[in-house]
Length: 127
Image (cartoon, rainbow, N blue to C red; front, top):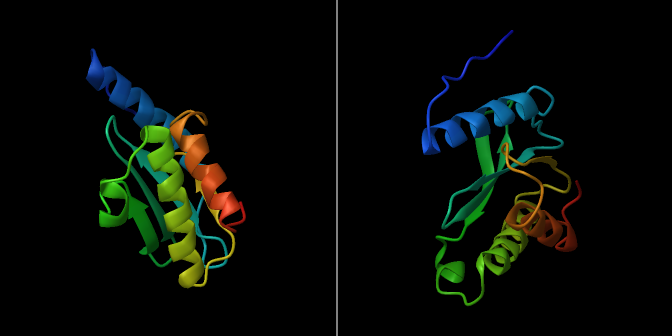
């Protein structure tokens, strides 16, 4: 089945390209109760990570740079992404999740996305 995303100009084109890449990634990735999906959403200022069970349609754990424990933190955006990764891993482990499937959300696996994933791995979450 083909998914169409309208071609536009400027920032709308970038969002459409991101959406196309995310659709392409999601064709192969799905979260289950045994291995839920760790999805990362990135904007210019913030980053959000959620652990989602796609079969039940529930979010099991989440963390973002908007959380009160991270919001006033010092450092650049990559350092904040590391804190989000560690926090989401801690919350996922508290929810009983040991292993996840990583969904980069159509973003390139570099920079803040890689920093978040590495911090989640170091906190004990298995990919």
